[in-house]
Image (cartoon, rainbow, N blue to C red; front, side, top):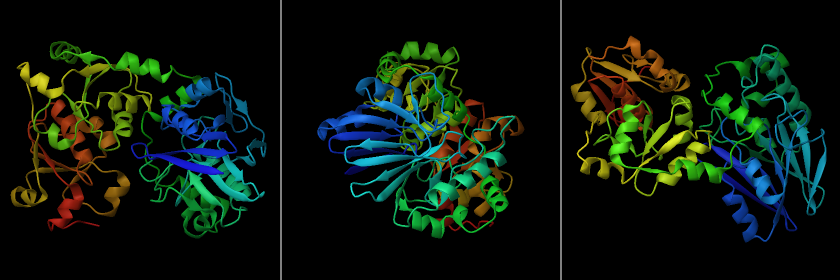
Length: 457
């Protein structure tokens, strides 16, 4: 038996490759199929099953393309309905794989069809459980993503409680837990740092698995939920309805655009997405560009901030064009006209206009700040609740554009986040909207603390 976790930091997502006696199964694959096909080929195995724990909201799964390329069956839990061929498994149905077995545990709560997959090893022992978005290290799946007028988050939280206590809590403490996400994913409230854990550890340390009544469980898992990224519902629909194959998407989107044509596209209202890191972006960028760097949670922030209906034109570091386009496709952003051929060097060589953003180190901020200036804290609510600058205005980055009319474009505005990645995104958004005195604080709240700035708790 062989198990490999394929973890993608950008999406905080874990896919899994399971193999026994030359037969393989993939759980929750990402959009591109190459890693799974390559692993199966390397190990001389045949992919027999593709298990989906639910209709994902935070990324477009690669299950359809992978099934087309391998002939493997796509398996969801009970009640799942899609616009392509799937097998909607029965509760506790068993799928043989070599000389091991995969048992379906229907665990509704995150979504109605959510299921976990229990691995029974060669000796008949319950060895591991692949929990998708039902159970994470230190957290459980949020119950507010599949709500409707007929089903509330409280209804789903009640289902989640019953699922966990009926299907997961009875498992032995040494059963390995392979969750669908790690820290940074918006599919939970506050997922822990581990990407592999055990049932025993979760019984001991997971806040949602402590002794409590059903009503108490419903309260704790529904309290403090932040708004889901706006692309979540789009991706869930894509995963139900199907999509264009990834090779075609890459071919259509990876188009080099000359500086002159790029300028025309920009003037016609296309979104300029600059994927370089913040240090490079601030030195010179195309006016109106939004900076979301490949070095961070690029796809998540694109999905949270940009309108998928408006075409995107890309600025990347040379050699990063394909990566930038693929990572957009992972979250369903396929409306890409192409990328700036030759990057910013070509733009500047063509004599076209360049803008800049001022950034300062925390020590410089301490020296120049006065109470007449505005400090903008663009971290999430949960981050700002722990500690913040007492004089700062708190507006989470995901909501920033809706607050633009309430800010004064003539004010000097210092912007910070936790470490510096999101503050440059926010700075570029405000500058695009005509703010004239935007100053990015490098290193964020971490740097400010190290510089001796007093924080309110």
